Image (tube, rainbow over the protein chains, first blue to last red):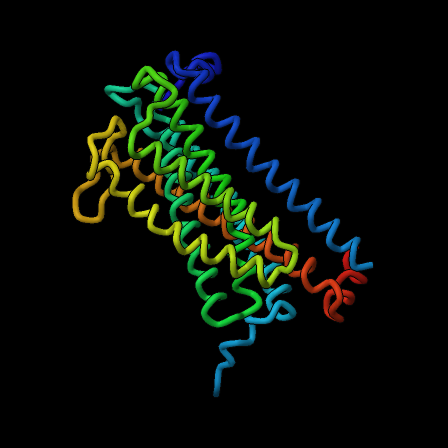
Amino acid sequence: MNWGSLDNFLAMGGYGLYVWGSYAVTFALIVTELVLLVLRKRNAVGRIR
Amino acid sequence: MSINWFKYSSPQTFFPLAGKLALGFGTLALVACAVGLYLGFFVAPTDAQQGESYRIIFIHVPAAWMSMFLYVVMAFWAGMGLAFNTRLSGMMASAIAPTGALFTFIALWTGSFWGKPTWGTWWVWDARLTSELILLFLYFGFMALQAAIDDPRRADKAGAVLALVGVVNVPIIYFSVKWWNTLHQGASVNLTKAPSMAATMLAGMLIMAFGFWFYSIAAVLLRARCIMLERERASDWAAQYARTAA
């Protein structure tokens, strides 16, 4: 698939909102899960000491 | 030579192994998602009917598969804990629930963002969508029930019953598109038929599915490590780990 330009890529043939709305939320949720896991681990270790 | 099958069934020995496995699967997940997204956005062609909107498939289908698969694995560990009273089984079931709920939500969210341009609506009370929403509530119910009970062993038992009863919903989700007349399309990928999509689209989707699968393993193991430390905080091995951890 050759998009030609960044604008075309971001526009997703007019479906940009739907495609990027899906991907952005998925990415944000996965990052949030990882951050929460790191915090939970830190907290668990802290409670042992 | 005899193999000790139970070597890793105690938190003390499983904890370091889980850390190494999480790192390995996390790396694999990153590689698989990079390759899958490259195929999905730069190799796979535009869909003849749906244009570019179909590119949501590369996260929607893998997330939906994981939402069902993780539920079955969660119920399996819950059942193992109930049957054999093993400490680690209940911890694994609890560790899976939030990641399962995450993928269920992603499946619903991306489905909604795909439904709007293709069906003209964000949501319908269709058999597939409704049963997937029930799956999300089952995950939430499991987590809420466990959180409401102070004694972890009792929380595991109560959660296990809920998880096992809820398994009946998984085949309902899977076969809903056959059993009822739904707006949601039938399965595009099937073990008995040739897939009804372009090879590069299929490859991108399957590699993303592996990526989500590896990610799930890594996230679940990381959470299992937290649960082990929380529940065994009075033990010597946990105290020793806390001293060495930066």
